[in-house]
Image (cartoon, rainbow, N blue to C red; front, side, top):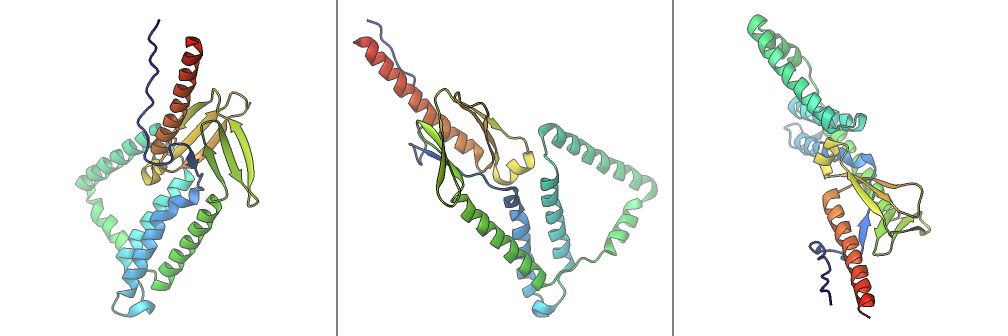
Length: 242
């Protein structure tokens, strides 16, 4: 008699061992740093000496515009690994070039003078309205994700979509899963990425973008699918024993 030992599944997650919920989020959630900057600017304006009607602090205005500009870059480009490394080297090269030019012609004094003439000021009403607008959009997005999500259990993938509770079912038999972190900026902001499922019974792959906390989600799915594989192998071993 041959002693057959079934493989041990990966470490059991703390939550939902029998199913995994995946909620695809739209790209607008990556604007949360702008929401935080708006709230900070709103509080800073209200704490100013002249109250809410006064012009804002230019330093706060610069910080807000810088964060907002970086957020727009996240929307405009996909920062892949190669592109991020290229941008990093270009940035370092520009810094060294400016240092060399400053040693030759002292251009930094001229740059500081020109930047000093730019006076970016927004009052409390601007920051407050921006914060309220983004918070309202985030609330609508949150409500929408309660009606559009994927539920992965031991036998199938259920795509819940629509406000009337429509469901699309895809079996998980012999399904392959692939994780893609295609944008380093989005991963840095919310640890997000893309999951690609290739079911054996479907011609087209199931692609889920902007999965927040993708590493944890992947770990839980692997545990779920590995436990199914272990259960099937144990049943096969029992049948062979008879």
